Image 1 (cartoon, rainbow, N blue to C red):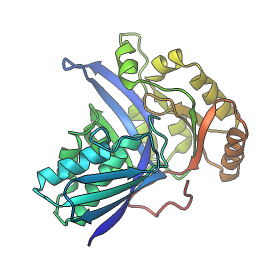
Image 2 (image 1 turned 90 degrees about the vertical axis):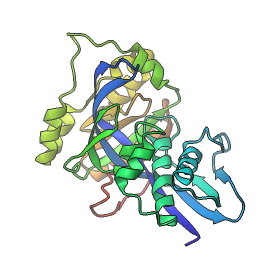
Image 3 (image 1 turned 120 degrees about the vertical axis):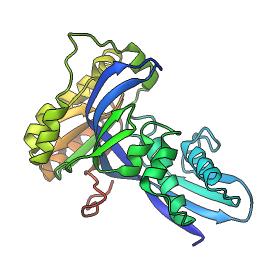
Image 4 (image 1 turned 120 degrees about the horizontal axis):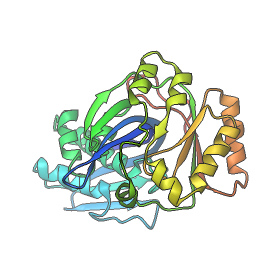
Length: 298
């Protein structure tokens, strides 16, 4: 095998709680993560030349160690004492800096693809131990599906899958600093935390109504204060028929969950038809690696 192509799946947080600030400056979180059919594509080729060559369809992305794909590949090659060269092509579909773990997912896909390409036999647990050195979301992006994420995001527990539904993503034309959001977060006795346990029970029962009613993201209390447009998009999403709408991660992407396909498609048309706040809009579905493949690609 001289080359391999792999997919890197986007994620959303259908529940995000922050428990405490740690002494090391990070925060302990409790999140429910969900993979989406929306994905990037990576093609990795073995070359005779030494070193890593990374190219992307987005000219502004770095092609050195600042890019998590490059960083993951270099880490994998070093860990397995592999000396040959690599040529990596990254076709980006997931919005950049959007709260959808696009960079982390690309890094995870790079690790998984290289493991297959060189047949090194590393387990997912082995790859996760490498991945956490790159970023807290990388281990989840190796696991995929529906999962509880704890600690700084590295402790993962698979959950019952999110029932099939249609997920609309709207990214506004704003930038959000994850570090600034967490630094601005204030936790006290009056903080209302998301009902993560209730969401887990709803997943066990495949109760989409109960699950969407409980969806919450504690970071919205910070990001919406900085960027009120996020709240406006959420309200417009529900007005367009979403069962509920939430910001993913620290933002700025907003997603809505729809049970009905035609209603989701109508909402997609509404948000793509000169909607003033949207720069990128996608209609997708949940991705589960052990279930049937995505029937609706974005």
